[in-house]
Image (cartoon, rainbow, N blue to C red):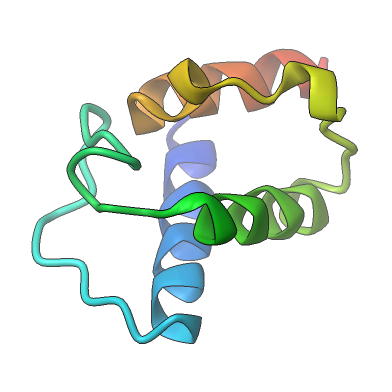
Length: 84
């Protein structure tokens, strides 16, 4: 599942860069995307869209809840389950 973490990190950095948002910490599995990285709602929508593209999947609106972004690990587990 390490490759999923790396892909998520790449997408997070891409969304941050597009929004001229600086990430000041290492992207560990425990990083809270909303709390630690200060992603706002627009950035989260962009993140979901880019994750859908990156992993070639659809994430339904009904599946998107704030706790999904409480850690990169939680997001990676969600993506891993969707891919199976």
